[in-house]
Image 1: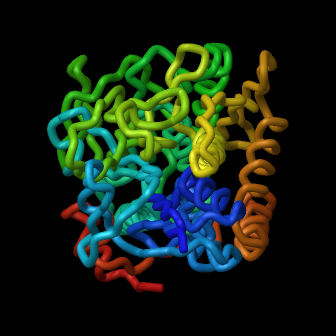
Image 2: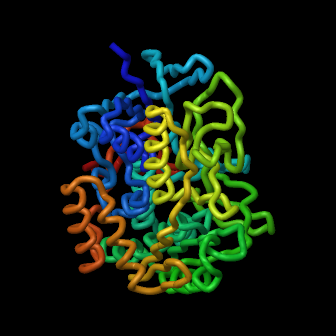
Image 3: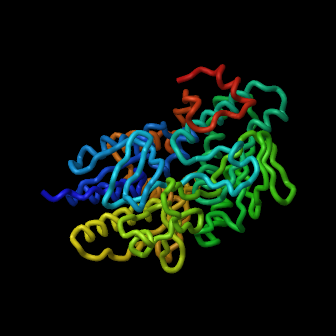
Length: 434
């Protein structure tokens, strides 16, 4: 009896899940590996961090997702090594052989060797990151509400966001909205002592959008109380301040890092060709240059469209997942893989204050229409009807009533995410836990 080929997909993000499900639907045996037992809906992490959503609304159990596919298995494990020559990978518990491999390992924060950035800033890549950041924000509010020193209150209520891309803009706007909504809970906090600074190293916000939309974004953020700094390059981060290369410094115990990511690739037996942000060079078919049996997609792959590198957003990963699955099926049938062509359906970025920007074809959108589109698109792509229902209810409460129901500090194991800043740790431990 002929042995069924084994396809292994590493990473259960947008691209990995799409590749695994597409292969399983075609009757191909697939093993999906991820270090977490859940799929993370990354675009909503900033809403978890700013108390719009609960953590469980931005994640979904992988075993619930895969049980609909008889040919799809899931293994919770951390891949530590890949031997490309012998076609096996190793976890902490076992060694697994493969016939075809899809690398959808995602990304991690890139700190550009800036002193203190990795140690003293908050990333926002995982649900644990989002919970840790939310804990820290509300610990800051609690501490600020108790101090009578205006200087200390200003320091506690100064939040610096590094990076003016979509995540930085979304988080800055959500923080502006959060400050407005929590003032009823903290009457001793003066709004003038709250400072939200968005630091962008380039000449405009949302560099992937036309400049006019970047300017509109900056104006809307200013209305929400956000200070926007362009050409502001961070040179150092400390526990009490963020420093810029122009000599300026911002006293703060809260530096949030959204300035970019790099590919998170496991150790391999053979050195691989790395490109921008550590992504793997791939052929037009998404295969590695010297290995027909290995594909890289999403943030793990350096792929181009119209001569420009893809941005690494969810729609690209979803389409690459489908393309990689189809190419593996072609190889199983003995035919040649086909080049991947990305179909750009448009880009959207939410700002806050019922405003967003969008670029669909040659059409620029700004205001409430792209804001509604952003909500609708992300709601449709959420996995699970339960998540969709509760996210919709949370949005109705947040945007309809202007109330954040999740203004709580959640318990989190010390080993997960980044801990609170030292000056807030003792204070947070004294607060009631949910």
